Length: 304
Image (cartoon, rainbow, N blue to C red; front, side):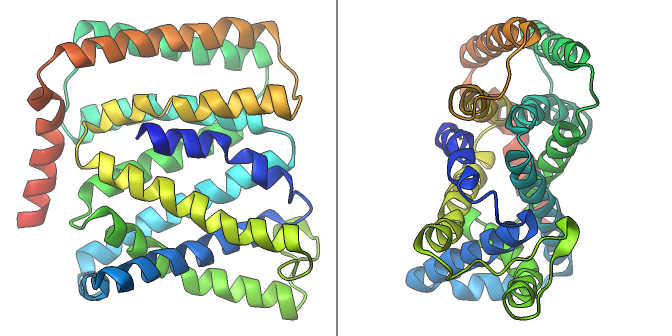
């Protein structure tokens, strides 16, 4: 989960180099090249039949379609945020995500938290509220990213398959749409929501390389997150992913030179304090208490 957060946190850097490519086209390439990586990996492992078996399960198809839809919207909005100079706001969305995760874990998965953990969540929530109030704008990018990623995480808990197979199912379900869009931009002049001409694949080495590389920086963290989601409490995993927005914010400020206000200087240390409190308290508890609910949920779903 830590490694997944680190890769995601640094991912704005390559996307900044291709801000001239429409966000929908970049997203389509993320889906397509992720599909190539996942199916290739399953072929090498001799497990392609597992993906085929999931396609015969209505329940798994339904969960997979919801997960695929959520993560595709998340990718699109994130890329759009980088392109329009809102990487810092995107980082706010991933700071919001753990609180959505805690709420969903409490309501849907029946997880319970200690007093110290609730104190940590309250401090972090206050910091995000302070930052939002101080900036004086409605952070729609942040809200969309937090919501879609939280729903996606719940879907991962409900998947009765391993990480590679489950993510392969997701990208397989949206790959036909992605491929259609790539063909449309390359040969039919489609412009999409931004009204800019696309078809940049194969035009030069940098653009083509980054579009292909987007599959790797997408597939890797998704596999890592899926693997971790089966072995951590959902809420614990969500708070570990604070690494992602922290690095995104640092990239936005130090690399992209986006503006920093006094509100950022106050809010972000509060978030780190909250994270330290929650993490220390989590490690004080027995391992089984941190993983029992997630394992019980997965086992129950698999039997059904």
